[in-house]
Every structure is written in C-alpha cells, then in structure tokens.
Image 1 (cartoon, rainbow, N blue to C red):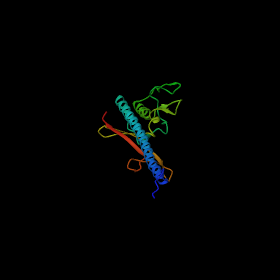
Image 2 (cartoon, rainbow, N blue to C red; image 1 turned 120 degrees about the vertical axis):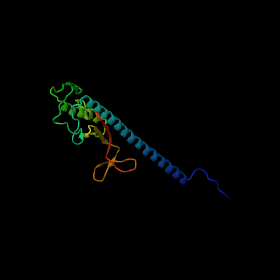
Image 3 (cartoon, one colour; image 1 turned 60 degrees about the horizontal axis):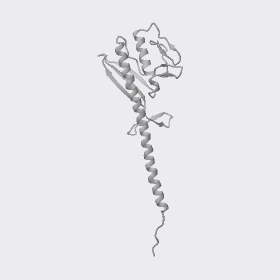
Amino acid sequence: MMIKQQGITIIEVMVTIAITTVGLLGLSTMQMQSIRSTQDSGNRAQAIWVVNDLINRIHANETASYEFNGEITCDAFPANLKVCSAYNDGGNRVAADGDCTVNDMATFDTWEALCGMPSSIDAAVGSSNFIANPGLSITQSSLGDYTITITWDSRTSGVDTDGNVTYTVNDNTTSQRSNYSVVFHP
C-alpha cells in the first residue's frame, strides 16, 4: 500500500529559502551598483559644469595665465588669495579687494570655480560640496591650448588592510580617482 504525501517537506522549504536568498542578494547588489553609478554621474555632471565655468572665466580674462603647478584641491584656502569679486557669506556681504591684478583674478577664478567661497553657514559654498574630494589641474601647451582636468573620488568600496580607502571599478580592479578633461583654445 502506497502512502500519499501530505504537505511539503523540509527539503522543499530549504530549497525555496535558498533560491529566494540568492535572488534578494542579487537585487541588493544591483541596487548598490545603481547608487554608485548615480553618485559617479552626479560627480561627472558637476565636473562638466566647473570646466565650462572656468572656460568662460578664461575667455573673460584672456590676458592672465591660468596655468598652475600641480593639482589644486579644496583642503586649504590659499594664503595669497585676493577676493576679486564681492560675495555673500550667508550672513554678510564681503567686499572685493580693490587692487586685484589679472593674475590675482585668475587665481581667484580657479579657486572659486572649484571650491566656492567661505560661508558662515557651511565651510564653503561651491562645487566642493557636490563633488567627492575635487581636484583641478590646468596646463597650457606651447600652442596656447589649455587642458583643464577635474578629478574626484569615485565609487567608494571600502577600506583595504592598510586602512586606505579603496574604490572598485566595474571589472573589479581598484582605482581611487575618476576625471573629466577638456582641451580648448581661448
């Protein structure tokens, strides 16, 4: 005599749980990748805005040299920076320095486009609030062409065994910085 099965077995329940778990893990991984890509896309869009702003400023101040040695970051406010444009710090209007040269204006333009100006509300109001750890380099070729490069931290993945922050790219290689670069002739 044959006994018919009634209900489901523990093996069937475990298989169902395993399949559901794998599916949910895949879904959460896809969501994390989407968040990373959205952050990178936002950083790139802001970098494009900064580069376009700098190109316009260079066109407006053609006699100055916008070439700087190395990469400019927002970590420290330059000691020799003259404020060549009035701005509001969130509570008060700050007047511009009256004795700015064209090269002072170039330094001010570069700093302000990347990092913004100090504010009583936040540390600064500018692109540095929207780009992850921005950096800027401007070089000029012998033909007069400028190369403007914005760099930023991309897709935080974690910390390595030495305590350094690492970043993961699609092919599972590590990289710490992404960049956007434009070459133009003023």
